[in-house]
Length: 259
Ligand SMILES: C[S@@+](CC[C@H](N)C(=O)[O-])C[C@H]1O[C@@H](n2cnc3c(N)ncnc32)[C@H](O)[C@@H]1O
Image (cartoon, rainbow, N blue to C red; front, side):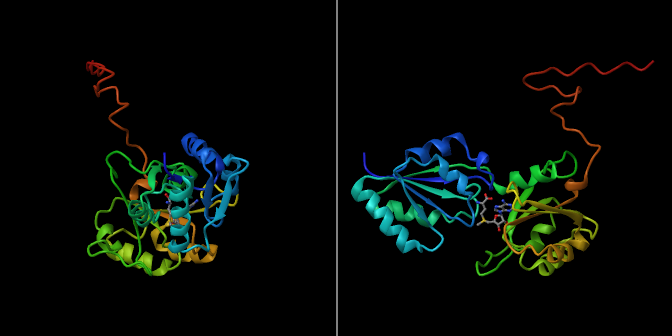
């Protein structure tokens, strides 16, 4: 059979947002690797009684290599638990390349991203008909530089909903970039800190207040920032549920005749 690693999305925080598949595979693993600072300890309740549990915060990729090489030699099943969904800022690519190099089988298991948890926390759809039908997922440059053409200002020109990860530490520069890019000062924003954790906090404000509100709340990490006119929109409706709109499963109702 050989060893295998599953990159499992643990969800945004609350352990009951782990998927059923993720929970099952954690239960099948010989080794569970998790990061205490990002993943709720409750996720470990699914681990088998004899499983080896490794806290990853202090291990660099070299330490992971050692563990994965042992998984090849001893044919171990490893559950590597990531916060949210592994496909977003999850640093899985380097691990996948390592697996390919040493001949360890791997599989990705999706999770609930903080994007969905943040939208749920504010009770808002991110794609509002006739206002915003696109969501840009991005971040500001930090020690990780942004590729050419991916700066916040140029994305802001689209004026649609933007979800900004990993960027609460420099809110003033972020606010400036968003406004210089073209969002109006009154554009609605939301900042969700630790979405779905017991200490979740939400700020809802106008863009011109964003930096002050983030600073006052003291959020520097684990916060997702949402911006865009769709966050404050109302009064539009989707085609899908409109009586005048036919689709595969329903014929449009005939328009009422004028008297
Ligand atoms: C390294 S990224 C990981 C993102 C993760 N893979 C996901 O799908 O949500 C960490 C960033 O995601 C966002 N984040 C992760 N969990 C969060 C949560 N529970 N509440 C708010 N933002 C969160 C924050 O912007 C944080 O700086």
